[in-house]
Length: 292
Image (cartoon, rainbow, N blue to C red; front, top):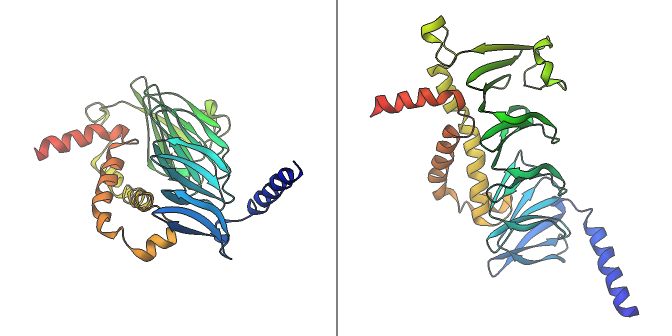
């Protein structure tokens, strides 16, 4: 019993030591197409039992075991059990993970930022998250604070300081006139009284009524070009996940380069269509009709 107790104590102490390691202190290695972690002295920290290991922040790794994804830290401690089919890395340090109706966001410590109750979660300007539940959209900040409940028909940001929201068929534009990036106030319900914001209501087809076009072809092309950067980031992430190794190794090997154009095209198309394409849908349909 004493030997067993000493063994457990030793393992516990080793985990405590390893838990202080950052991602720069460990090295990904592979055996038989599976990946694990070693320290810089070559000591095994995590046995090679994962199909993929992807860096998350400074202290965690996205893991794939068989066909399911999860999260672990540098000591091999499982922070999120690998039981999810879909995974994404957001802002480089957040994990979006889920199946179909239970998407959640975790930080690199495995702490829940957004609970697992959404059909989709996507990043917005200003480090915010666009959430979707029961076909309605809402907003949360990077700390998980709910900015807007999920009761809006659509939410779209054509610019970093402008947000457009559809509620009961009515479109509202909220422009932050002070500051460069949209930062909702704590008391968002009284945003109309906040001198840093300008709230404008407009009808869906305003051209015939007032001569003011809320949704223009300029908006559409802005959306096209603004989607290039997110598409590129998502492409890199997907190719990294398909390779199952750390970032540095992938860039050195360049094994994903032949796949890049096809993966980018898919991500680019996805960004054009969803999730923030709200008021541009009519413009796109008109373009499609003209092209056909």
